[in-house]
Image (cartoon, rainbow, N blue to C red; front, side, top):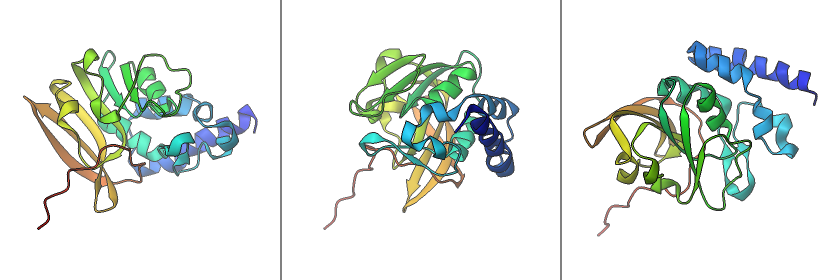
Length: 210
């Protein structure tokens, strides 16, 4: 594939995947039209860079489909200077988009997870659900995938009024959710079903069974 091919594919992604699916924030459209997603995909899978599906990564992880990324960014309402806690750095694609929107990014990735490409920010290695308390408080929690629950440990790292965007797994379906932290309480609203990768380590506690 040539650079021109990827540029054409990127433009097609914007027009056929994002604009037609309620990603109408012009700042989000602009950065996703500019940041070369193919540079954040394993070399052997670059031909899949702009396909609307998850891309497998080493270690059993996967890169979210472009639409999931676009919807998360739209709901995040990133402002220049926002301190963002990114859970699931993966290859660094979402971190690059957040950075392009003016955010200061602290990204968390599993110790044996993918290596972010060209990451410009703070990278913390460890369990995703633990976050990065040393950099708290954050203005935005951006969970780059779907989880069964948002752990209290992450909510505690957010400023009062902080925004949260994530996918939530409900009965095998992944749903886009957004909300805010008021005091120490997170309120989340379910917005729409969106295909997202499921992040490891976020299983909700199972109820006691007699």
